[in-house]
View: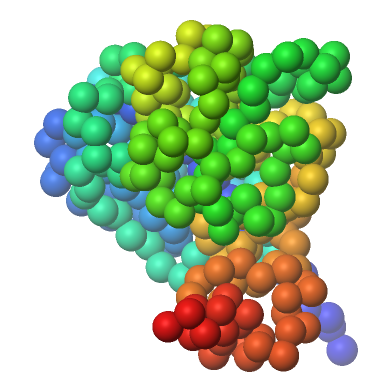
Length: 288
């Protein structure tokens, strides 16, 4: 009996670029048509401030799509070939559908005066961040992600904020960051770098003297430096839920009801019922 061939791995890409974009509707329709033709799944956000995309499909289709973005006359003026594209692999398709949406912001902050395509803080490479940590340099390492992401893992010496929504970042920083953090170097990081593009400007406006953002975020650090100085996993916004420093999918799942990520230990809780509830649901119920 002839054995079935193993399914080909799925190539996942994440990329964004802050750039002034006009004629959003025709661009959305062109992207939707191309993605559907190539049988890609995921999401693309378009706004007047830029583009943010998470896509998955066979490698040939992904490469064809990127070539289309770089050379199609409709997008050529955007210089998207300069956009950093992070790649990872999975054994199955992590998205269930293909969405192309028009948004006011590709990463919502609610601060119209912050325009990363005009100004943002300088970046620090993963290698330089690792060197700073190796050397024990005196600086602040700030995690700008939401609390449910941080629970899965973060850098060992990271300062963690009590942040439930990125929109709250400006206010939370004013109340939770000590004054002495303003006068020494501060390196901020998020999953892929996009939130830090805006968050870095917020801190500059609040009087921080030397602000850097980790180039490409945690995922780029994993790719370049592995898990040195990092503990745990990194939450990702697709069906994989989380990846380890080797960029491999972990056993973490997400609660169907409240969307909180659940570790293997939490999946053994009496409160965890797949597709029904989890320990976090129980906490919310008791608080009600």
